[in-house]
Amino acid sequence: MKKLYQYKIVSTKLIPCLYFLMVNSLIFAQEYPSIVLKNKKLEALIFLPNTSTSYYQASRFDWGSMVGQITYNGHTYLQQWNGYNGRGDLGIHNPLTPNTGTGLAEEFTAALGFNEADLQGQFVKIGVGVLQKVDQKVYNFSTPYTIVEPVKYTYKSTASTLTLTQELTTKLGYSYILERTYELLDNKIVVKHRLKNIGEKPIATETYSHNFMQFDYGAFSPDFSLYFLKGAINPLNCQLVAPKKVQLSETKVDIIQEFPDYSPCFGMLDLKVKKGDFKLQNNKTGMAVSMELDRDASSFALWMWQKSFCGEPRIQIDLQPKQETTWTSTYTFTN
Image (cartoon, rainbow, N blue to C red; front, side):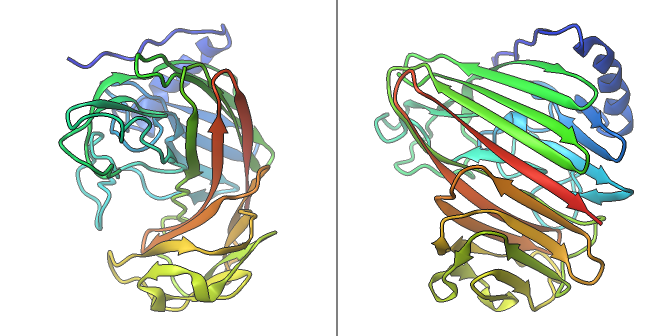
């Protein structure tokens, strides 16, 4: 049997938000537990993690990073989460499918301990927990690994902030505490992270947000460009699937073909300057979102299809036992 998440209220400030959770679970998220953060112009719907009713319960993405919808000044950002099944048209959403993460959908790429474990052994995925191998010699993020032990969460909130703290202690030598805080400031969402290695073994991984952006539920077209704000790429060294759908220059990526159906363009961009800050913009309407990081990028991935345009700057994390690190992502919305 799967263990249920252990929740506890760590601040009395959470009590009023429980009303929002119940109401918004019905209005915005149907059966999925959620909370809505608000300021005067900006709203963010965030799904709360557990092992029985949460929006995402699979083995790839960090369960505490499912931001379902962002609304600013009457316009919506992030892909349509309702019914999202990871492919093509809307269908039946399955929380146990690894690729059905939505919104910001952060991932820690390393499968810690995977290579040392035997074919039926266990390994650790930050943001998920202890996972069971399935006779594979190579880790594959799309595989629905069984979650033997999920991480434990606590959380606290105010009207415009939410802090989710996850902790995992294992006998595999990999243990950690990760604190993630969402804060709404004017037209910005600031996402602060603090990761501490409390285990016996080093933690080495890349982390990124999938950034499933979609503007007012519209399809992506040649009206859109992704601009690098501080960095630059080597256009001739980038490795993309379906590269003819885009035009690359040192400082931007332009869509040059329509996306009529599920026919993605994706791959890794070769960073000439190790900065991941970017702005995704509809050049026709001016609607845009930018992402800024307080750390240099170690790599940059690109994923796009008709329903989402994802710029994915990644950062490298290397932590010895008892060490900790912090990083912050700031999203700015304009229209």
